[in-house]
Image (tube, rainbow, N blue to C red):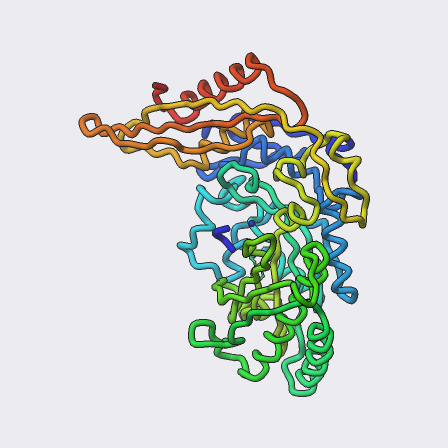
Length: 436
Ligand code: PHE
């Protein structure tokens, strides 16, 4: 899934001070605490300002309702939703067996406070910690952060639910899981759902060396049955599933450094297959690190925004962060209501072209973070529309088109021109490019 995944903010004072994004600044302040910066620091003021908001715990917020709905499918699981997003890269990656060259570690993809601290990029970052505390079946909901492009379905902060369950690795416990599997299967076979499955274990999606293949099969089946049930709960009625038009769910082999076998789940909705979650049998190293002997189990991680956009008909991911009463008042905790857009205000395109000196580079995500810092949620999308290298000077020319649109009001020309000139000024200042 790496490729690609109420109390409103008005009620929370988010005191965030930014010392400067230049490499010479020595500290950054996050929720009242100062952290030293270093050569890796790339966290931005706009992203820092989102940390206190915790949308998934705001009563009435669509993300909170969706979290509760998912929790209701796992009634015996313990629940966590207050883990800090600041984690060590060790916890986010190494503890989960990520190789050193995994792209997720790069500065282009992740936000670093400094070399020892980053914003978690996924809720799996807490697996070891939660297992170590003795939880054997649990759900953890949290904000996660990834540097990305700007459009209606990408935002640098989004929310995930992680779920996991571990079992004793012996035949009597496996017998119990088999009985549970039979029960879950009976429920699904009498429901309006069609599942396109793949083999539980294959050459390309292998059982782990230390696992009894029969145990791994039973656990994988339990994972699949539990999640098929969740898909039915989430999408069955939204998709209007009937015996003649059942909900379609498909399982695909996947790869994650911390599960094997691994899978992705897709749901067919309004004519398209949507990627919903990643999951698999927990790699034994994770449980060993957590000092959990003689167990095996499954884990999954699912992104909330994409599902909530479907279930509540929310057309733009920025709306989740809206503090406009016309948005917030439409939702009530525990209810899946259809969002009624209050208006679509006019958009305004602005282009910016610049030369990048030879030997220097500017990642699209650097450009997007800069625009977010200046324009906040007034930017709807950003597209690179031109890129060429001058044959004589070897300089690279790039052109980006920024689409400005507020979700709450009409923007005046003057205001957009002012934002654009601040973007252009900051671009020269921060990256030393030559504006054309
Ligand atoms: N953490 C993975 C992601 O964000 C999802 C995942 C969770 C996969 C648990 C397997 C097991 O892409």
